[in-house]
Length: 287
Ligand SMILES: NC(=O)c1ccc[n+]([C@@H]2O[C@H](COP(=O)([O-])OP(=O)(O)OC[C@H]3O[C@@H](n4cnc5c(N)ncnc54)[C@H](O)[C@@H]3O)[C@@H](O)[C@H]2O)c1
Image 1 (cartoon, rainbow, N blue to C red):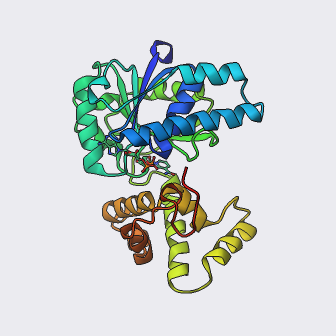
Image 2 (tube, rainbow, N blue to C red):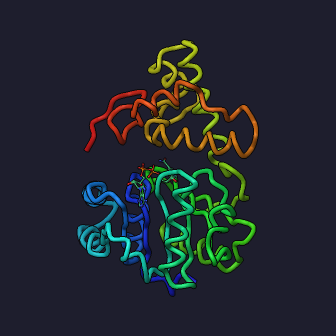
């Protein structure tokens, strides 16, 4: 159970990995954040510090908690450091081949009892679990973006995931101050099965010229009481991630309602991935 968990490895330091590392460190765990890109790791460390400073300014955490959280956080771009974690959370790019490679590496380097969780948005957990020699200890832990602020974690058991792995993961999610919701292992799970087609439809509305990007967002914000419009939300998620999610669901569920809009593909091909690259449907300041 989680009282045996002291050290957590987080693989991938993009928007999700950095947020996950922050909440794990804030919950009292020693964290190692790994990424292949050294520059991205430095950026992630700065973003975590900035996020903690904001929380301290808003008096949601004390200055002492801020310092202690930063002290528990380590970064590495050395693959050899991927060992001796009690629990691992993978948050690399949404690509099945890449995730399979990472899970094979984690299976070889971490102790056999370590639970390996994936933050995948859409790829079935069974598919990931099958590349390891410990499919009973592989589980889905789908955090929401931005991780420090969003309360829900979708927890997904593959056919091979054990009851003990599920119990430990649910307990860990609660220790992070989150509310876990258990869902079945199916492409896109529940949240993205509902959300991704809606975001895709907003892109279709733009492609068909039904309204301007600003007005599509404004209409949905004011009509559905959404905190932000769907095109802004797609930019926040990352247009590459939105495309990967739709492609997985379209391929695996064999339903054209998940077919990505060509305009979404065009943005990704042009490298306009949303907030993380400074431009998607809208423009952003990159930090
Ligand atoms: N963006 C969202 O809103 C959101 C929400 C929930 C889940 N997710 C999922 O989280 C995962 C990451 O998404 P993100 O938005 O953080 O993407 P991102 O593009 O911000 O970050 C991906 C990170 O993976 C790293 N990476 C790539 N190859 C690697 C390798 N071989 N070894 C180590 N690191 C490697 C990249 O350097 C990058 O830092 C995806 O599976 C995505 O589907 C995303």
